[in-house]
Length: 342
Image (cartoon, rainbow, N blue to C red; front, side, top):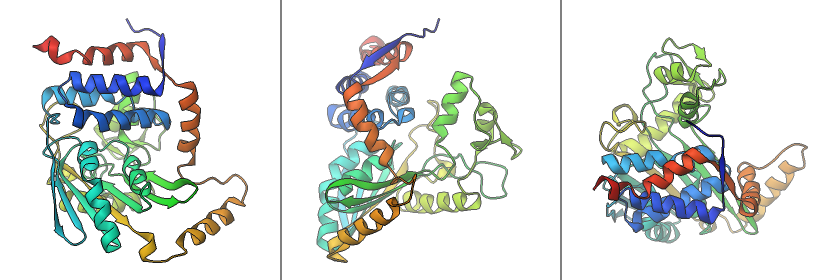
């Protein structure tokens, strides 16, 4: 029987629990640490749908082989501004962390650089990656393709993923400008979690298999996600699929195995990143950016994109987070998953 009890966790607790669960399901420390960091950061930023709530997906996929927790990613520079990384069916997080020094160096040496992760897995919060690029004083862009969720405009069946993109612009004395959005009106995981909890969803989130707006998450999962901005969201999903899938992949959205469930083998999706050295373009870029930001914020009720995340960080760093007791127990079980199965 489910319980309404909760457990209080500090952000350090979140990291430790995540790390132990991932290692317990077969990931080595090199792969588990960046993923655990991203989960802690998602909780800190208030993006809980891809924090501890999503950790069971990672754990189940480690256990069934959908993601390789022992993968040793490799990378090489194939052109002056190009780095290619083979994630070898491992986590995107660890492949990115392995490659970022080379990637940043390429961008600084050439004014701009690109990184393509191939044979990869679900990226989680795509803004997590571009913020790490911005921490190095570089402008960051990221694109990640994912399994089918959005129908092509006018079509009845899901074909593109929710395919998120993110952008981060560094600031000298503040958090970066951070934009992180999917090609759909909301992340698919929100619909999945609503279905699991027996909750309804806003009629702007998904379409049933006949193309009609629905408040039933199960009907939405049988149909498709609503694209952000109508046909413009579909176009964005296609752009992301071509960058992350055609250049990365090898899977495009339409032939990638689903992130939901344990069947289908590794999804082999891709992620594509661009890093720009703003100093190579304009020495007073920072002043121009700050002038624009100040002018925008003069209007009432206006905030910078991503600012809510940064406010949450201070709050949850002090207060910690609460977790449903049942989920906590489930995650604790994963910490011993392989020893139990053996």
